[in-house]
Length: 301
Image (cartoon, rainbow, N blue to C red; front, side, top):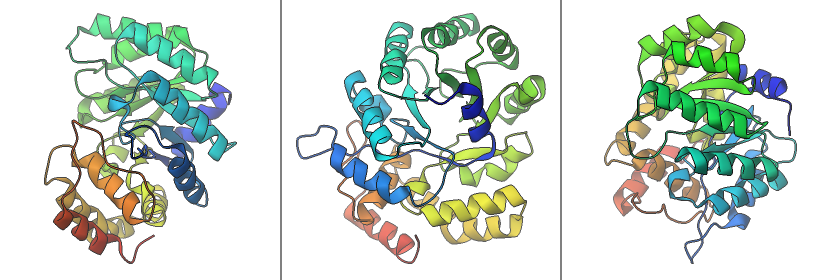
């Protein structure tokens, strides 16, 4: 397991990616296509992989499947930091975190708890329990019904040394800025909006120096080119890539709820990897939409 301080330093400015989770003809996790896809991606350097995350359909995986995904990723990319999606109710999240740690994971991304809204002190207790259940680094993901305030996060950071990061997928720039100002260098900050490249420049102004990229799954060179330009403050290149690729991709993604995952998986299939369909309740792209994706990525890597 990578030391938490080393992991925090690695993710502070580097690009993170969310590999999709392949499913076979029987509907189960398919490790061989997963290995092949990860080995292909290994030629393109990133700060770490967040496996079984949102793009990896964590919400449709069983706990044992998540552990199997972690083991497969560790074998396919030895030495690469492997952060795994973790969530659901507090007891299940704690057990899952321990299973991920035992499987060789280096950290967890704590996704929103399941279904219900909860008061701030309840969310705080949930995060604290998960942090105490594992030695791994924990990244809190503000999204959906699970949103921590800057004050809550500051208390947790005092109590939980292994709380190393904050990721935002809410679009609430006010809260993001309050967090980054209050916590400073205590945490690493990761932008986590769907297709975050569309929001990266705005988030940079709120104190978030990096983000996770889902499109890295199928156009890794484009994703890295954007991240290099973003890091260098080369807004002209960012805006060119937004116009040429990211906004056309978003037009396909926005055709149906859930396509933020389905379109990524379609892109990986178009690259020749047998990753199978998405699991319900998501649905796959239509044949026409898949053709639009193919046209978009034909000359990209």
